[in-house]
Image (cartoon, rainbow, N blue to C red; front, side, top):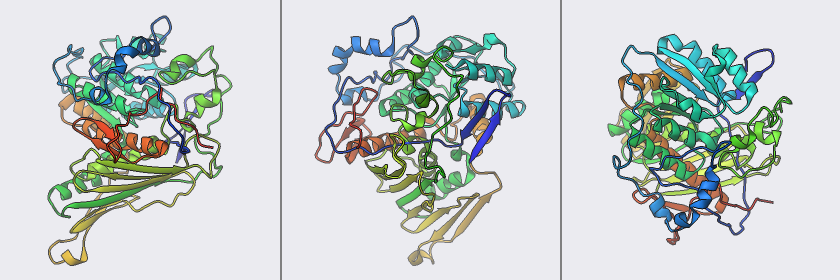
Length: 493
């Protein structure tokens, strides 16, 4: 579904509730260059004019980094042994939460609108906005009713404000981790759009930062607010379907123009009013390209395609619905790009993820055919079927256990994937404590599956994961370095 959100006569923002892209790679040797992943509990700083960039800093430390193995890079840290983060403001039950927004493109504007509409019931104030493009920044400022002093081109300047309690991160994927980590280090709570991060290592850094700082983190997968997935988890934890066997789901659609994620170029955008260098972040720098800016979902530099932008909306709730989300043991993924060829990313994706308990997920995605898989979780004694159009599930016993297991149904009048409900849950957790619907433990497990799936598809490998060491290997025991911003994967023909 496409929703058009007019901010003023000049700017009409178009967004999709879920955005995506991906691409197939031929079997060629992979050339590895410097890995930019930083130690887990190291505070990261963003690149910016007048200061040392992340890439230059990493190049200076390349000799040291080369001596650190992948296993050590991903080693689980001991919390409480590093410098304490900024404490943040203590919020009472009746105190208003001051919220700032980093990234006010289509998805960021959607959050601006939803939270403005529900500001009274959530007891929040929209305090600041940040974006690299002045036109979007001005439109957001006017929509909220802020002064120019409450607008920022650099999120680090915004984070210096002591009165800001929470940050909504709706940037392009390569900025998700850096902005969220910087915010938590500054004592802010974070609502971060999916996917959790662009690459595997960034997800671990985010997880480690949440655990160390104690900030509330909510991943922007609003399907996790659906009561049916929580009821499924309750049934499964109660043993009502027996040992889990396998689950399935999909996110499929069909673009009528056969050009998914192609967005119109606004002629007003140019390097004079848009900080193109900063927008690119850790990615390889290229000359100004309006198509890359507006249609960034079509390029691997900025996202993982269907895996990062559609399938989180299946993996998050499905893993939540199991009642005990696990890290994967083995992941295999294939993808093709034979119909939509005007992009780098694939137009179909097929993912198998095996978990230590024996559960296997089969999840598919497509932008060139909308016929998906029925969403369900199978157990030894029964299966749970999820409705695609409402908050409703059914537990059906297997034939041979029909005398032992009773069938059950559950339904809720709440709408599916309700973003305001998901946002309210975030604010409630800030004020009252507790784990949000899409908390960091769930988010990291889904992120590991999806990050390994991208590696599997692009490198033509089946990958094994050890959750204790965070090491990745092939079936013959060969260690695999996770892909990052500096990994060069040959493009497919």
